[in-house]
Image (cartoon, rainbow, N blue to C red; front, side, top):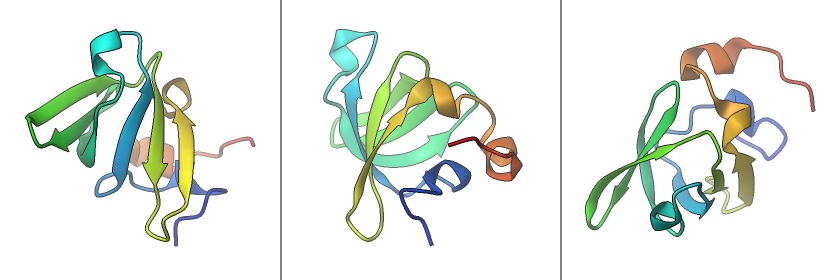
Length: 91
């Protein structure tokens, strides 16, 4: 089960997201469903289509399945998702 305490060690695909801050002002406010994640990008399905938002210099507000919202600093989740899930994270 995903909780605010262990969200960094879980898969983000399938979660609703809002881009709270981005280095590109045009990307601020993008919201939708995370459909894919790469080492440096989060790909979001929006009504206007797919949007690619770089993790670096971005802050994401993710809604967990139990409707709790968590803000993720993009620079802390840079890396391949499969590696992030298995690594130890200091909190």
